Length: 316
Image (cartoon, rainbow, N blue to C red; front, side):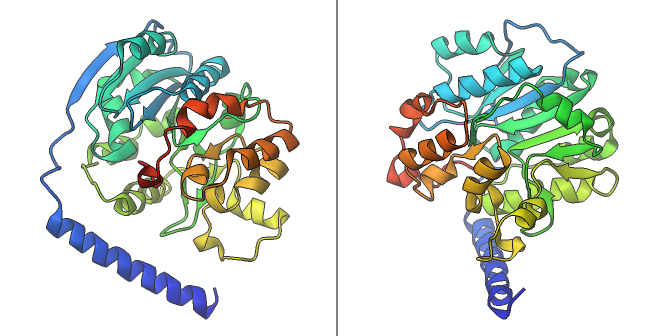
């Protein structure tokens, strides 16, 4: 790493410590366990021969968007049972009825603790998770799948790792990114997995969530289990020319979204590409069309229309 990036790393870490200290001094009493407003079975009975997906969702307008329903449908078609966990203010009766057709359980919870506390809530509300052959932790911070998803369980199970993600990241500590984490049976039955989620607390400082829980999950579970990313950063960097940043400063889903799709048929697009980088829908549509993606960007119309400048950072 060059001197420039080494200095940037020191500054970043100092900023993190300062912000964390300020957060600790100024935070309101948010440490109480988030209230579960609703937790009921969906229309689909659990099938313990299938892996289970705990799917976290949040929307500023308390709407379940078309792209979320598309993702849930593709998960179901691929062979997952789904537990839907919403931290939006409410779920409408119309959405509850529609979600029931995709899910084995629907949970509405208070918006505290980001997705890791959402998954913790899902494990508590659906303790049968350990009866399934595998567990997928997922959320709606991504759009897709952009390509055929029907073989995803086979790809995950055939990978010789115990925990499989889509992408990895080297910030803070080498770790799998948490928008898509597949844990095989030995993992979800392990003391390490159970203990990790037992100790999760409500934290409202997002970077602390990334450092303590996203990176912390890989750091703890990686002591016993093998981890792998289907689209590992080092593999991607070996095949493309990207010299702007050292790997410790690259979020592949954010910095390398276009080559991931065009060169590797990566099945997701982070929402932050549209909200934080302000890439246009026309540019995204052109990239997808040139990659032979079957994803219909028209289904994003109801979500894109709601993107406001003050909400571009998003909830994740």
